[in-house]
Length: 358
Image (cartoon, rainbow, N blue to C red; front, top):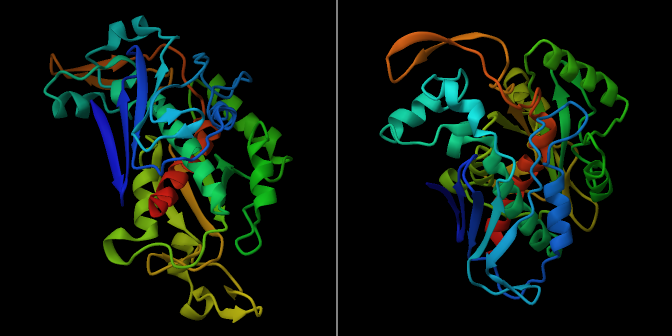
């Protein structure tokens, strides 16, 4: 089984299952001759790796990609760039006793129906968050192409539960702050929020529960004129890529749903020129008008649901016996997906933006 996204000329296919021997990605139509830093790719991917502070799963995967094609003597060749990532820390026996029980919040039942009762249920199979590792590889590759065009992207934890970080300055966010949040263990603008967010996550873990939050993402250096109206707008491509992250439940650009409660005179971003560039004094639109970039920072936020795998006893069904049942999920699961979702959302943005340069 593989899942493919086609954005313009760029095609990204993700394949594999959570407890199979490996997962991987194929990226088609990247420009040839681009030097890629493997160290930068590994650094990007390490941000998605499980933490060792109780805020994430104890599954210990190194996530070292092995590039099989499309890369030679340090450069892209123009052939499809294919990489695989081994699954080396599998505890498949954790799923033996619940193989026919629909885990609430998971795609066990829907996948069972969709794929004629043949899908791999261990760890969620192809529906697992494990498949974000190859997505992040693709985003890390695209980031290096975007850098050549002067585009910098980053994301941070906007909220966990009811605890919030500061938001990116929608008008003045720059690449310095974007690069800085990437270096922080919990990617935050205001590091004083760290302790409060950890407390929320630890409380959920101790209660055998989980907690969700919001990731805010930004891109600077995106020139005006990128995108198209109606079906192929910049928001459309970004949204399609971002929803490849299984935990995503919603997305908003600029001030998003707040725009529904204010007047047009408050929502409209007034234009001006500084003599060199046309800008807007506010950025309620999030850098996009009519599906096309306007040259301001691109800003969006995405809602991340609580981890569905929790240790509490829950009601469910046995979808093979068609009987009511109860389930108690064992294994190693994140009490909060949000910190590890940050580079995944950033990677999805990179893929969407890169599609305009292929």
